Image 1 (cartoon, rainbow, N blue to C red):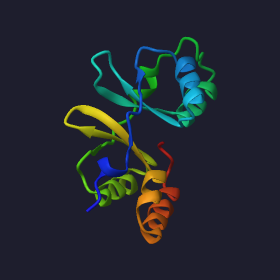
Image 2 (tube, rainbow, N blue to C red):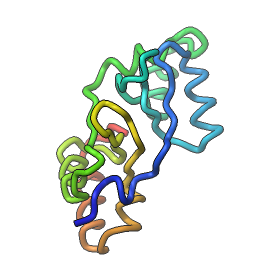
Image 3 (cartoon, rainbow, N blue to C red):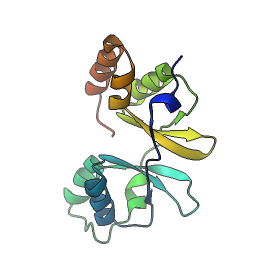
Image 4 (cartoon, rainbow, N blue to C red):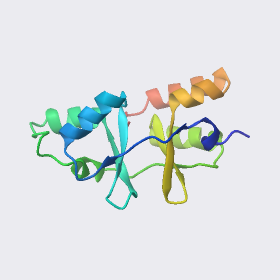
Length: 143
């Protein structure tokens, strides 16, 4: 049985909840990420922020990305995660249930990586991947 830890992208960084949306956007651009985990100063996961969040909740609403804090967006949604030693099938079920394309991977209270659709696509049979993509594509995008 393949676990999340075996196929995740390890060591993915995060963004501090006190930084600005502008700083988050620059980090996403620099690192080619569409989503970043958001952590407090204590390093604990507080939420996630996506490029879509920035567009729909900041830019489209006329908020100033230079003064809007990451925590203002990250606090609006439940953090959906997967345990590092959970089977990939559980990750797929979690992605389907919550309509998300990426999951922070945690080991206890520590974030150890990120699991994306692409990670799953590289590791699992085509039929499972197709079912996942179809299911997530028909739900509202969260990340």
